[in-house]
Image (tube, rainbow, N blue to C red; front, side):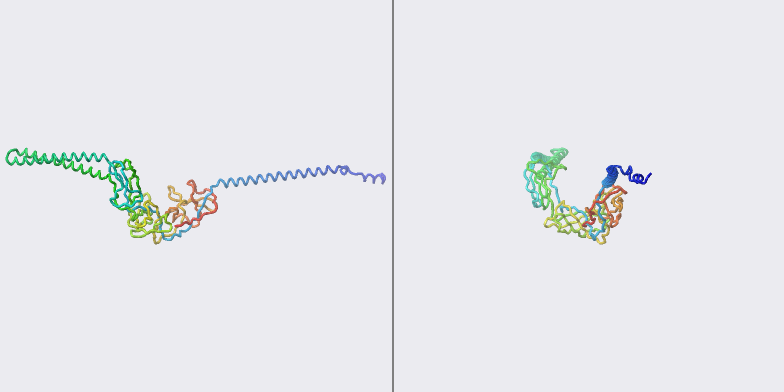
Length: 402
C-alpha cells in the first residue's frame, strides 16, 4: 500500500465516531431520569417512614394518661390546729301541735324577736271543745250524785244512832258515798285534762329568741303526734352560740376545757370570733376516730348563725412538721389512705401515708412522702404502681393556706 492510500485510510472516521450525537444525549438524559426517579422514590420512602414513626410516637403519647401533680411541701402553718365546726343556737325548740285542729291565725314570722310565753299561732279544735263540754256535763252529774249520796249517808248515820237502821245499811250508804265521790273525782280529772288540751290551741314561745322557721298556714290541718310533720315554728336563742367540733384522736389530749379558739366563717373573711371550749364528750367515736367537743361564743350582733359551717383554729404548742397536700390527692382504700407519686421515668408508685390532720381542702401527712415528691392530684381509683403517665404542664404547687 502506498503512502497515499495509507494516509487516506487513517483519515476515514470510525463507526462510533460517525454515530448520531443526539443519541448520546438521549442516553445521558435517560440515565439522569432513572437517577432522579430513584432519588424521588427514596425520599418518599424516607418521608413515609418518618411520618409512620411520628404517628407511632403520637399514638404512644396519646395512650398515656395525663396527670396533674403537686409537690409535697413542708408544713409552714405553725402550731395551729384548724378543724371544721358546726354552729348551733344556744337553745333551739321546734314548736309542734299538741292537739288536732286547724290554724286560725299565726302571730309571728321568720326573723321576728319573741319573748317567752308570746303567742305564735292559734288553732281551732272543735272536737276538743265538744269533748270538754261533754266532760263538764258528766262531772256535774257525778257531782250531783255525790251530793245526794252524802246527804243519804248522813241521814242513815243519824238513824243508826237511834237504832232505826242496822249497821250494815249505814255502811252501805257510806260506801255508796265513797264510790260517788271517786266517780266525781274522775270526771273532774277528765275535765282538767281536756282543758289542758284545749290550752294547746295556743302555741307559745318557750323562751326569748328569734323565729328561724315557720310552716304554719291559715286553714291548714295539723295533727298531733305526727313525728314526720314539719314543725309549725322553730324558735332559737342566739344570744350565745354553741360550736361543735370533731377533734382527731391524735390531738384529743391537747384540747382541754377552758382553752380559747378563733372562729372564722365564710361570710366574714376578715373577722375572727373568740370561743371558749366548755366541755368534751371524753370518748372517741369508733366510726370517725374523733372526740366531740363543744365551744361557746357570745353573739351580741347575731353575726353567727345557727346551722352555719365554721373553721375553728386551736393554738397548740408543739404542733408542726409534716407535709401539706391537697385533700384531693389522697386515695382511700381498704389498706388505708395512700398517694400516687411519679418517678423521674414517668412511672407511678403508690405510697401508703398517715394523715396527721385533715383540714378539709388540705391534709397534713406525717408519714409516707418526703419533701419534693411529685404527687398526683385527683388520681383515678384504678391507678397502680408501675403505670406510665405523662405530667401536664404547668405544674401546680402543693402549698396551701393552713
